[in-house]
Figure 1 (cartoon, rainbow, N blue to C red):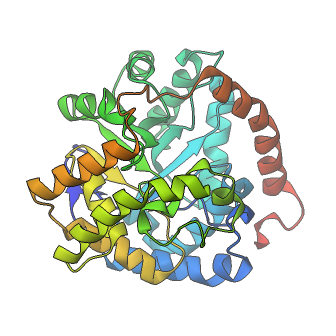
Figure 2: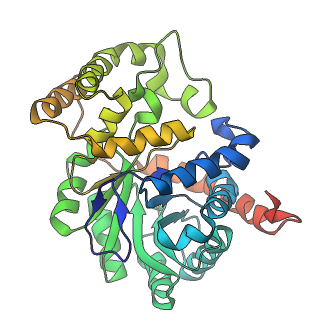
Figure 3: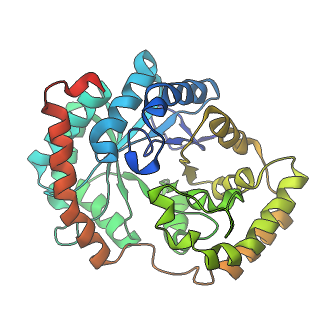
Length: 345
């Protein structure tokens, strides 16, 4: 495993573990996965040197945090633990209350990284950062991060906090390279980091799917990436991934991950459906791509997604839609916290 050097109290692994799938019904993994496989995945990740574990309060309405906390158990203090608040009502007292709720679900004394899940489209970050400062002051939060922020808003959030906003978690992979325009250069020059979610484009870059073998879970089935025409157009990129993979005795997914984390300021947080997939993801940290291989992947990526320089931030319409839905998400998460028998699953 390789690690980022950002002066944090704990090491941050270049390959982490994203846990959206823990307790989230939309992935279709089922109760056995939540009760058994998730525990095994986390345990194996720790053995392989993974330290970055990422979750959020709305994943499974709090179930992801509870499953991850139980799986880490006494080892929780040794990892770099990251979770996120959905900024539906982004005022300081609510930020503080939601952080306490997340820490309780995780059974954690400290959140190493507390992130704003997405920019609120109508409220700037001054009040939410007042809450973050208070959480840092009492020691519940170590580092502050954001997610899905443009560079301008990332910088504004840092100004509002009065100290560094360590990270920006954004979608970054071979078919979505918008962060290369501004976010990655800023992170490298300023000593910050980009956390790449969906580094395998929800599995597209694994090479497992084509028009005759499409995913069935609700998350991917609804994505434009997995429409038959998109899968056809991706065949060139998948072919180059396979060629590079063959040269390294690796898989296309491992090469796609190695490409993402080649940038010195980037860590990736792929999910894992099994221990075997987790092991494969972690092994990608050891793959060193040659310059010619990297350029071949760049060229194949550009042929598939020519709008590389697109703005990385979500549109106001998208953010507003998800903020409005977020009120229901947070309410249901709170219900899961306080209903009878809340901590039995």
